[in-house]
Image (cartoon, rainbow, N blue to C red; front, side, top):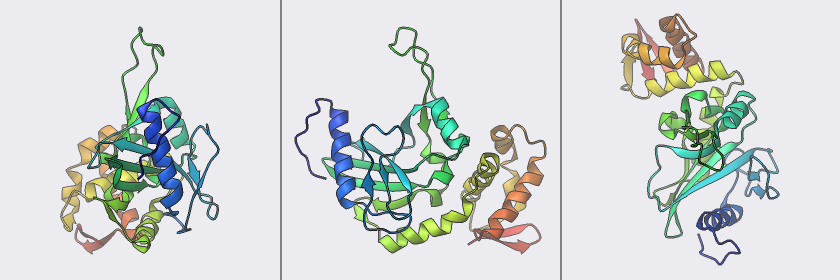
Amino acid sequence: MENSQSQYKSKSQQARVMTENWAQKNLYCPICGNDYINHFENNRPVADFYCPICQSEFELKSKENQLILPKKIVNGAYDTLIKRISDTNNPDLLYLTHKNFQVQNLILIPKFFFTETIIEKRKPLADTARRAGWVGSNIEIQKVPEIGKIHLIKNQRIIDKQTVLSIYRKAKPLDTRNLDSRGWLLDTLFFVEKLNQEFTLKQMYAFEEVLAKLHPNNQNVKAKIRQQLQQLRDKGFISFDGHGRYSKI
């Protein structure tokens, strides 16, 4: 990523311009594989880029002086983000870390991995602040299932394009427009990923309490866990080996 002079005085603005210029020159569409993505006109409220072939839209966020992926990404207004997720009109997220003008990591988080579970509500700004009472948000990427963090670049190593596209295709069956169903499915997958290659229903029941807190409107969490495991089986993520035993695929 080249260091260039900018008309902007703010370091954050300069970094944004540099990363967007880099993306314009170097990025392909990680969803359909088109060789390039286009930049939207300035001041578009949500997305930064779009693919002219599959029409996917992307928001690009970046972090300077960062060698590894953080646990959280600072985001904008909490209510706005929740509404976008609820309306399923949020863009796919591209997140880039760089240090000394060298790209360290670049991941794609597909839009269907966004649920209320991964959105942290920040404290309102103080009464003395210019935007007193404003409530921001963080995207807790540490809570995103691993398959939902698709690396295009990892530790400065460019990941093969066909590998990226293949991982996206594997993740795509998790796409559902119903936010509650999506939340349950992805939260269950998140905890499945914490278990060994072969695991039992009893081990999944150990997450009953935390899932109940994440989904307080459900009064029969164990039955919901069984239902979600069946869906993950049908979508090709796990296999049922009988007698309450499962294996990851």
